[in-house]
Length: 609
Image (cartoon, rainbow, N blue to C red; front, side, top):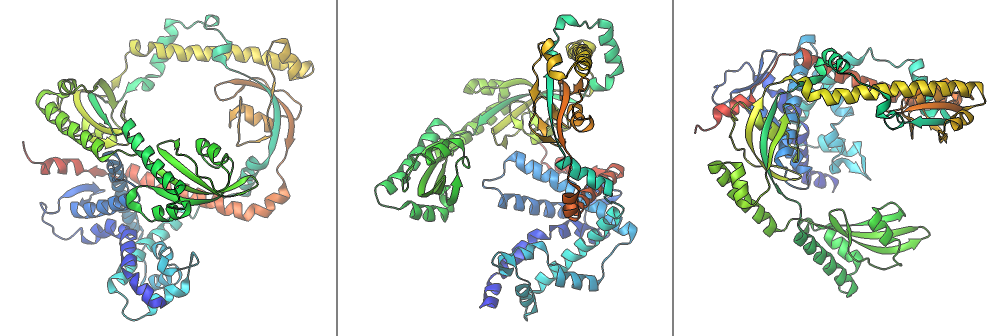
């Protein structure tokens, strides 16, 4: 019976392995890079340290990454999401090529014996997590062994597993080699524990220089502005910029879409109230109906405050067995049914009705897109938008390397278009989609990186110098008050003489954020460095200045530290090794000769106009 179920699962096992072993697709080019290939059929899309990346290998890997992203998404990927997945896939592919080059340089490989040992003792994660090899939610090694011990195991499956280990095991060796010098000293370990567990409590005065010191109390001269500009020219380098006109067609639901969702929620509630369905049966039916777009589940026992505020307040006002009216929260209507009450807890069934664009609304958007694009290509974007009564944002500036278009949100794919060599002033883009809607652009102009003229940044420099001088003025004043406090009976007495309010903190650690003192600031550090009872001078406190009087401090417990020392060391060692490997990989990239030829290939393959 068990084996027959496993045979039934063979297709899904093969599918999940195909997804999990995409690293082999990345490195497949290595095995075939010396084979002659017709350039037109499999052109070069990139070069890494003199080694070619071919179109076929890149497209296979990209498709696998896009397929994974689509499987994990509740809706089709937008253009912006597709762009991000594509760029992430490219970076991953370059990284894998660099890693493979290091493996070859260092002569790191893997033997057949090592593969057999890993196959027996370290199954691939895709198999460990597959339902065919699970018992009560845990990996069952006996099922795993039995499956591969039976006769007639698919040869392709075994080949994929072998390729997985031939890719992963050498990389694991390389990571161990790279990170073997990383260690955590006893001092670092204790410091990390102490930072989490030593606590303090303080009284303090926290002041904002920008409001306490009036503008009239400080003077910024033209000479100082000029001197700052000359000494900090790098700060005023402007990146290459493009000016575009933008039209956005929103895909946010309309009032009519909201009303439709409300009617759906009302009809579901009426089924229950009219006795045609129990709420539990409704939940079971909807939870297995993915086509409806509705979501239903039993939330189990929940406490007050566990749900979003609007739903929480209604749920806890219901009596046992009652069904709520539709509750609008965010972009959905919620129905809740109180299955049972126990003290402060409720057992709830829940149905969520999302507010979605209707088919008619979506069709109208597509019709508007077709009309606007057609008119824009003939007459330009601004006249086209004006003729349709659509808002156009003129003169929007985007900068090279940014992923954002002001007013349109994250839209790196459009920024890349604006700086493409084939995009000339007057060119109209296609529509690009992100979470806010569909966006079409027309390029007005582009400018190279340049130095901002003094006139353009004078106000910015003046504000910065003004802020610095206010800090200096307030620091001197607070230092004097700190001296008074140390000489004459503490912070409260000295602060009261100047009309300043003294606050008392809760107990906090070095890593906590403290209102008025900030996080990891001089003021927070003083709570653990000054003697108990002493008062500090003015200290930086996250954009403010503070005087701190240490009221109490509880040191970290050495005995408790010894109990968790091993676990903490393992955690820190893992974190530091991961960080070190990431830095090592970034160093490989920084020193590599990487040529990205994807755009040139796209231009060369595009039909001539």
